[in-house]
Image 1 (cartoon, helix red, strand yellow):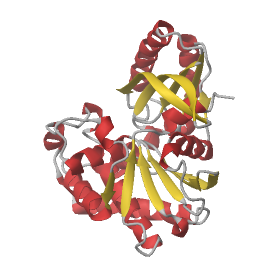
Image 2 (spheres, rainbow, N blue to C red; image 1 turned 90 degrees about the horizontal axis):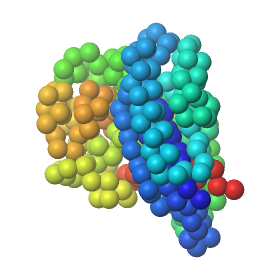
Image 3 (spheres, helix red, strand yellow; image 1 turned 180 degrees about the vertical axis):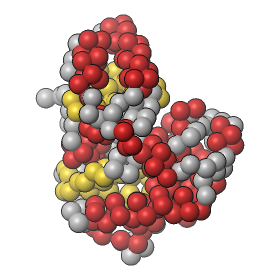
Length: 316
């Protein structure tokens, strides 16, 4: 079965076309096409509550391109999932109608909890075969929201979505280039509050492994490794000690936009929001270390996330 999956978030819209097969009784995806376009659909949504016309035009242009790829590669199924920016927008019907016209499917505007579960499903390779006593915390750090989901090979134990994404917090707090100490502290306060909310329903102290997914985490990992170019095969599955992650996050946040733009692994669409994203990831890594009394002193980066989960969710 050739399956299509589209994840439309606050910062990017991504396409996966994959063939599915079984390996050791588990579903496996073999990539045919994996594409990303930074369209910043959530531009200004935190402040206005509306999807901007220019942001819709960028997103529709990417959808037109994806429609051609889906037809070219003969995808037999398609699921289109929209997340934080669309959940928050008062004019989301315009977006839904535009996508339906271009792709022939109605986007599913999913809840934060479902977003968390799909992220866990996509990152499940990190927990397959693990000891049942293991508790893996998957953190999907997006543009508008971040999902925390705790589980193991048997499935999800608890999940929570909170509104701390790299685009949202950059727009809310980081007005200088580079951000001032006071601006950074404002972001960290928002993250601390969000993690406190998560801890009310997700037993963070049970975490034995921390897995981070999505562009902020993988870009921080590329920076920590000093890669000469963005290389998903190197990044995927890389486990780094917490102090190395924190150092990389601090370095990225302290840079100017111009300095970030010159980094060989930096996607152009992340230049202005990676500082905010790095602040979020840094604080989460620190808080999980604290919540587990220092037992979790590292984090794993995964290139497999909600996009893979969307594709796998169509198998039945």
